[in-house]
Length: 313
Image (cartoon, rainbow, N blue to C red; front, side, top):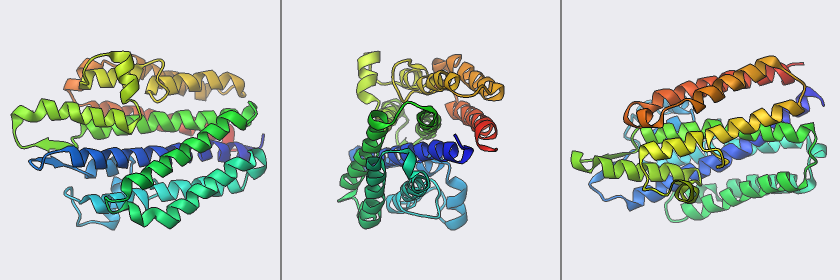
């Protein structure tokens, strides 16, 4: 397979998963804000940092500070083309990548991705206001899941499909750590210290919902939501497909189907060991954001190793 085609397939799947997760993140934040009493402050700014767009936001909106309103954040996360991680940017990038490799994937995939792109352009402005936001985000999430379903059901299990799977696994691991990071950084600030634990648990529930993980958490853990249990589930669960360990284990199963590249294998083993040996109880009561940053750094190393091994020639 040509390195250009492999690169496009890998990044196409990453952008589709990024678009879905961004839509989920904004949706859960919007619902959480509505559920909170007025005495509790909800901070939208951590969501910008979650998708790695904090520096770009500061460049374009230097006066915004940390106390930025939901409409500004929603527009930036969903529609702003200056933000390469926005929903619109991700959908556009997925479409452009697919345009160059249309003969490698079923026609239905192109139609679904094109429909998603057109829907965002036609209806995106409605998402800024609260009235139609959830309808818009629900449609986007369903459209992304449709693309994922078409890829799973209709694509031959050749090496091209393995690059699709690899891109999805790495993107999901990265987004899971970023959403955990946002939850740990304090989306909710109650006025009374006595209310802190209750609202922190509510915050972890929102993290689980952002990753479509709440029902599976209840099924596996069977205890009330706490930071420790949520971290253990999202980092180390063997069965939930959006947990970091599951994604990295999937990547480890994919690599033997590709040409052997020791640097990629070593980078993957290193980060999987880091996640497997993490102590969720310690992370829940200390600064888990620092650990998530470390994982994201190692995911960056892994991506660099993959790019050098498979896409540089």
